[in-house]
Amino acid sequence: MNSPATSLRSTTSTDPLKWIDDDLAELQRMQLCRRLPHPLASQGAVVDYDGRQLINFASNDYLSLAADLRLIEAAKATCDQEGFGRGASPLICGRAPAHDSLERRLAEFEGTEAALLFPTGFAANAGTIPALADRGDAIFGDAKNHASIIDGCRLSRAEKHVYPHTDTRVLEELLRAAGGYRRRLIVTDTLFSMDGDLAPLPRLAELAAQYDAMLMVDEAHATGVFGEQGRGVVEHFSQHHPDLHQQVHIRVGTLSKALGAAGGFVCGTSALIEWLANRARTYVFSTAQPAAISAAAIAALDIVSAEPERRAELLTFANELRQQLGRQGWDTCASASQIIPLRVGSPDRALQLADELLEQGLWVPAIRPPSVPAGESLLRLSLTAAHSGAMIERLIEALSKLRPQTAAW
Ligand SMILES: *Cc1c(COP(=O)(O)O)cnc(C)c1O
Image (cartoon, rainbow, N blue to C red):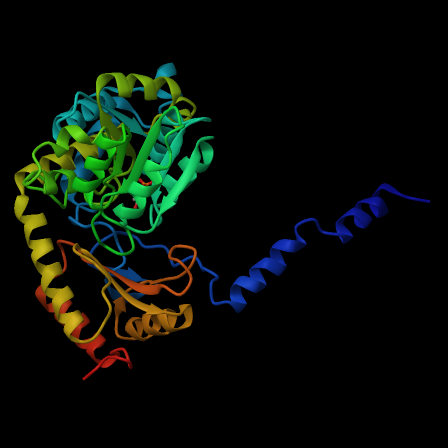
């Protein structure tokens, strides 16, 4: 006789979630299991990590604005005026005056007709790509594009063509062989989040023009850091390629890294923005972000224009650090930015080095698959405007004692 209790027991005895335990154990075994870090009260070059003071080389807060009082004040004032939660998506009734001001400001900043604010940078990519390419279309993407771009490509029903990292020769072959598609889209990070190198934008723009393709770039790590006005890598290359600005059709950025706030955006023509507001599902079906965040982002853009020395010094320090580490024998890949990878290969080695640095009060995260391809595990150093010369010296000193064994000296 089956009582309800025993039938309940019999269904739970074959736990349908048991596979998770098995797969987690496998991740552990491969040294690929991530653990949630202790929560941090605040961002900064020095953080209180579970009672320890650590110098933080893990954050994307490149201009050190995440804890800037001007952003905090702007957010507080906007909470007072516009409230907190937005109640609905922007198209229904969620759009606030601060969103409107920020979108205008972003269009002005990027020198485009219009801009559209998304809940996150991830949502901007995941929503924009499927709105631009569908069945019968082709997307061409760099092998090291960010996960949000890759997921955007997966969500579209277009055919995907992946070219080896920054290899425009292979890209050209792929484009040449892809005549039968209705539309073509080339999509790339401008500053790659793990390698710290730049996409070959001038050549990508030439290829896009030659093969009648749309060109979409993601400036997530470059906004606020690269270019005369801090607009990103498109601006950086525009100095010698004045047409580049027009040749990049779709620009994605995030407010969450150098700008110290949160949210993603897309800039381009008015028609593009109107289309995305109609068709990007992560825009249409997601609640508008609190207006206070947009107000903080506007304050950050003010600082980006008023304090160009933040980005200039950051890149100067990064160049010096990269050169010193290169001399120590570390493989810094093709880094040309404030993101400096130290490629060590195996996940165990990366974890071991990260632990040894942690012992010395230096927080440099080990990056392992799936964030990087197998065999390319690395330590990812990310420099910010708040790192002092003395902090960088401490890092160089610590790394000199952990030098790669295979280097030649
Ligand atoms: C971080 C990142 C994103 C996602 O931005 P969020 O605002 O953090 O969601 C998108 N693209 C790239 C290249 C990124 O590095």
